[in-house]
Image (cartoon, rainbow, N blue to C red; front, top):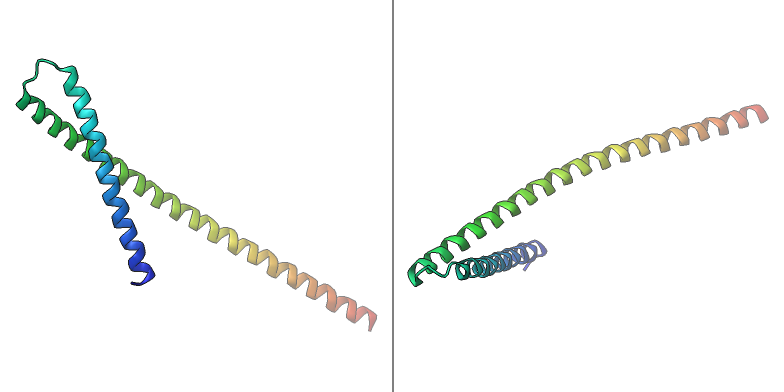
Amino acid sequence: MTDREERTLVREIEGHLLLAAAQEEGRRAAARTASRLGWLGEAERNVLEREFEAEYVALSRLSWQRTARRAEELRQMYETRYRALRQRLLAWVLLGGALLAAAGLLMVSVAG
């Protein structure tokens, strides 16, 4: 298995674990909500819990997607900034080297 395949597999496993955790959180929240509604029958309670869990998972997924989009935006923004700073640093290094070379040539010409 290549390194890339391993990373993909790890991401898939993480995704499944996140989904399972969200489903469990949704079930717990649904059960807490349904328990407060003592007048619900068993069938109504089951429907409410299923709907609540599905909505919870959908909201979690939407939140993850927003977070991933924002992370990508920030990554691109920081990469752009990093490239600009790196280019500026290179320009200053080259300018400094050129100035040192010019100073060296000037000293050699004056001394000679």
